[in-house]
Length: 514
Image (cartoon, rainbow, N blue to C red; front, side, top):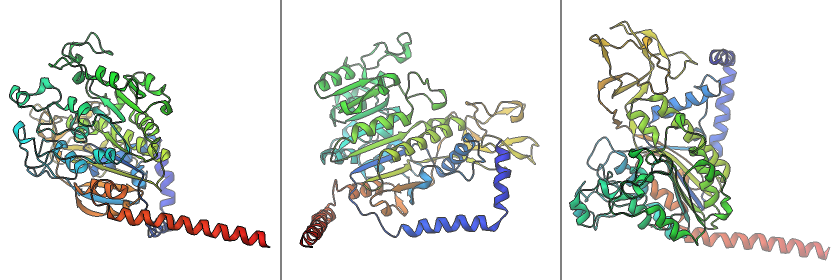
């Protein structure tokens, strides 16, 4: 079917007028962007595809098209439709190839940081608790909350993972998920685990959804969904039940805790001001493996989050992470990673339907890339997970278009590269071949794309340091520092209103006199 669609498309492609017409439509769209949207952004949304490098974006675009029975290459992702695109440099202050903690500190707190640290500046040393105090940096989520906006975090990982934790926590180790993961010296020195900080540092976050129940519960407490599985039991050594504490605190604040899809979708967002949703003991499952009865999709979580947050007349800030794109790549499971990326793109589309470009700045980016790529001169319409149309001229064996620079897909059989034609390379958990053997594939160091639409989106252009992103978003919304332009913008609005009001009065009087 994919091939037939491609052949039908190819008939049009043989006519130069097809390409000229397409280019002219694109040109007209580009020319319309000369009228810049300089409104104050009421709402801010950041979609973060963890590990979603440019090669992942391209492959996800093809997959999206092929899932819709198209050739794939000519498909548009929702993020492709954004009018402004930039590149962000992802390095950490101490690392050429970044990790998700230091990068999250950059795109959330506006400060580049060291590898493995969250919510602290580069003066903080990883794993050294006594370097935390005095080196904390706050995030745009905190700036938005201080400005009176509603705020939310939605992720497909555990909520105390690297990306979401930089929105609220200050930790010299991204791995201090609960107090059970911390060294005794750090606890004695007064450092807090990240799960505890989620509920204490910014205690009134309006929407919190993702995974991570086990880090909130006392050690050996059975999980509500998997009561007979010891690996999912609570981990906390301090005996605190953070979920029960949150529910007690929010019982008179229209706060609701849910742990499954059914209860989430049954909510009336008009009756909810605070929402805590923890749908797995740790990270949420891959979308391809998701139990559709118990686990909501990223799109469903985003839908509910926006409906809860948008009730605030002052607007909202929402961080959305497609976190398991990264995990799929680390495991060499390209199919899992790309389906995660496609699901995040669906969530971007849903957010677009629930908001207006007129008053909502939406940014889509990644924290870093991966050593993932695809090539081999494949023909149009070839499955993104398929074989290249040739054999290797060295070992005379077939190879998939998708390959990794390193990772668990490195396999040698009888002293030579594994023959992929003997295995099911379309399997959801197939590990694509890698050049260098590693138990986990690594991040890549190249720049990542930044897509933007809405007020002040034009400020994201060219090549920037990654920490520039939250400064643009804050500027657009008149929160945080650098608000002088906001006074001018606000002073103009009443004048405009008065002008139209006066004009209406004059017309009305004139009509009566006639």
